[in-house]
Length: 255
Image (cartoon, rainbow, N blue to C red; front, top):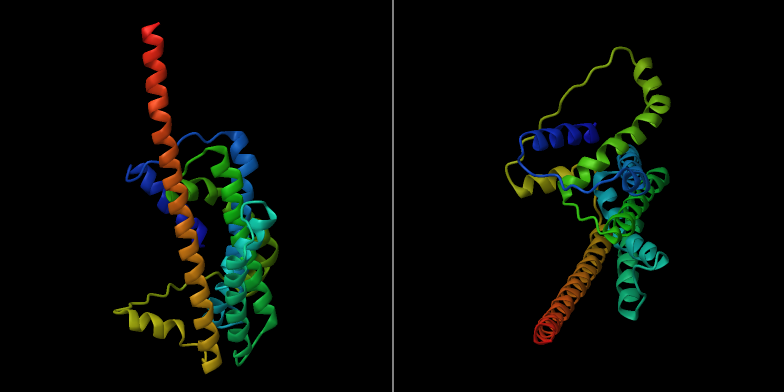
């Protein structure tokens, strides 16, 4: 249902002109780039949400901490990232933390773990496809534009398995009924309590998750420094090119 709500809200945003959708999308780009991204987004939603039927919300969040490792490994395989000793240490730290947190889980359901890992892989592939299929083609899209173009094909990718897997179950249970659940959270403490209300955390859980968080923070810090150095190098190249163009113009005027 989330993807359909996204689409309705995006249509309202575009209709009310709250935010402009970036132009430049062609049929070729959509079929070769946006559809694979939408399929991976649908895979993430499907497998990730199914995992909650087998494992607790807290344990699922712990498993999601492995996301940077999946993104980096796929990035190295696609030629987008370079392996280094520092990155190897960070990836090992995150993996070790997730393994320790998983070891401390009281009730481990491996079906739920497989579903959650499938959702992590789907999200990692979506990020890699965004880099390869969109950014490298020179198409600059803001988050609203990405969801505007991706949500229709994601909805279609989710609708097809829904017909065969979920629709028979819904028909077997009788008339459809949707009971909305409204939750009011007054503070961050209540949000944390709601997140961990359905599970029993152990010291090993918290210790492993803490190690994984430290690794994720180190990974994010490394990525931010890399982006900052790349931006500064681009600005230096642009500054060096401006005098060259100016001098060439003056030489042509003198001739």
